[in-house]
Length: 272
Image (cartoon, rainbow, N blue to C red; front, top):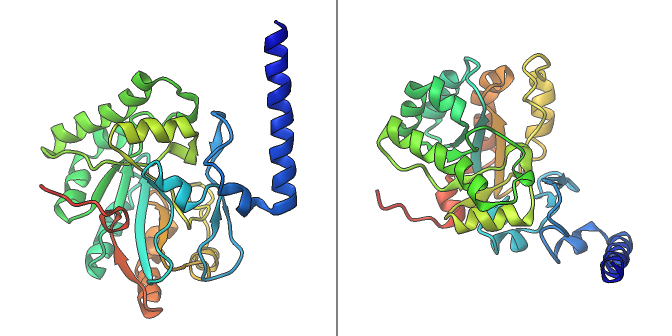
């Protein structure tokens, strides 16, 4: 009992020292040391400091890469990596796919089990048109609360199996944590399962179906904050996104941006 109390005291002191260091030297310096200070829930977060520049994440790109995790690309080339999250179909994905085809842009769609069950034809279209389908877990749980490999693996493998049944192909080994909730152990388990964890460097509040942003609100977030190496997250359930995507992609191209895929971001070489 005495030893246990002493360990807790040491942990408390260390925690205070870490907090003091962060206050004195800034969050960006702090984030160079580790992805997370514990196995507790960590919400992926960004700090935008200058328009046109990549934001600072609550873990550095260098630290994340140790776990085959990414949130931003290189800052020396005007490249955008376009990704979508979809927990269900809200009637807008077909229009989004039409726009992507018009602009010859390949995106990544992070899907859940419900989407595969209900919309196999749209999933097949994504694949046929050259888009990446990534793993957003089967049930969209808070993965940071899952500490054992068996349960973590089941959420990902269940997606792989159903995707294989639908498309006849293997699911791409890209994983996006639901709601951006993760911890260091999650990153380790995903990496051990052969997955690359994909966060994002630009997003906006577009997921409330009954409170959609206006075009002006969307553009005020998505245009000034675009930056070289941006991993852009949009929700395909958004009516606004379906309506602005054509103009948005046009604006990005006019600013000199090109679009690449997560394979380019991570250096993945496909053999199929």
